[in-house]
Image 1 (cartoon, rainbow, N blue to C red):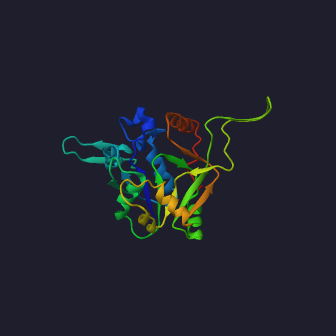
Image 2 (image 1 turned 45 degrees about the vertical axis):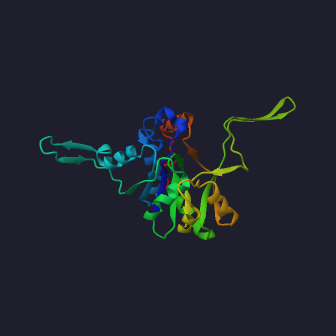
Length: 257
């Protein structure tokens, strides 16, 4: 199954990094977050990736062009340029990199990449979110409901703690509780190819008319994911993910064990 990753946004809320590199190349635990995302899919055997590029897309292109040397030790003969790789990286991924335009919106990026897709269902996510969502169960859910699109819904986590009051007395205090009845778009979509017909042009925002129309036509399902999900939208998010790695608390790896 093909996997589309949207990796072309400006990442303006992480400008301390994205002035130099695109958001998906920001490192978590020494590896670009896009590699962490691809590892999530790879653990389930989904290894055919299509990356929609935009802002500073050449940085991502150069990373994958030099992927083997970046992720392996090697010896180079400076006379003839012969390379000998040691402890070779074992990632057997097929990666297609597509320029979809610097100012293109999310739906437009998917539209521009659609020529590389066949008529089979495909997965799609954003280049800044990590999760331990079970992709087998997500796909099974999508097939069972028979709709054109499935989105992984995750529970919103308020930025600040929740204080429940009775007059001036604190009845309960919860630091960043999950809102039980509040769900947000967590990415990790499954789409039928017919979804492309809902995309008009490069200015189409996937999360507006296309998904709104699919929902109105009862062609959009939500797979509820109650466990780990975290986007990297701000430096605070990045630092949180870094701290998880530092503590060896990495719920998005070894998902099938």
